[in-house]
Image (cartoon, rainbow, N blue to C red):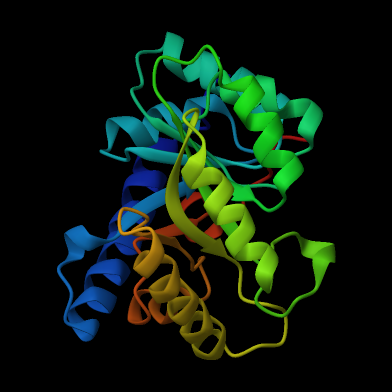
Length: 236
């Protein structure tokens, strides 16, 4: 795969713009910009873009489809890109072993059965797989995520597993919700999580349209796709 003409310049310009948005959001919230990690969401875009982003200083990449992510991670690695790979989509249990082979973080853990599948998949890893528990803020199970007591049961199961490391929480603002309302609720849940598990400091929240609100409410990771990669014709 090769990038289109001018692609390095396009990505450099968009990356600078996203970094500036993050810096402004952090300044407004009274936080250092270093508090927030940019996760570049490269789904449907080629490995060549991933390699270019790595060359521009991006350290974290997010993908949501295993088949695409596995091939892309291998290609980027072969090109010398050193990255942390985040799996951010709904994960089927039968894909756990494949994902555990390349991902550094799974952000979408939302059931005890998935915790058990990841434990089995990670049995031979040299170090634990970081897992974020996905929160369903509105309680709608169709988009993934855990709510109510399930959230705490899953968090405790991850924390108790020697094959996994509880990193924190992830959420997407529900459709139709003001982002500030959604992320304020997420922040309250995270405060409760950290009271029980002090090392679970990560909050993955905010995308291209609402990163400022997420940063305002404590996000440590923002998942940015379109503002970074643009709207050019993606791979299918």
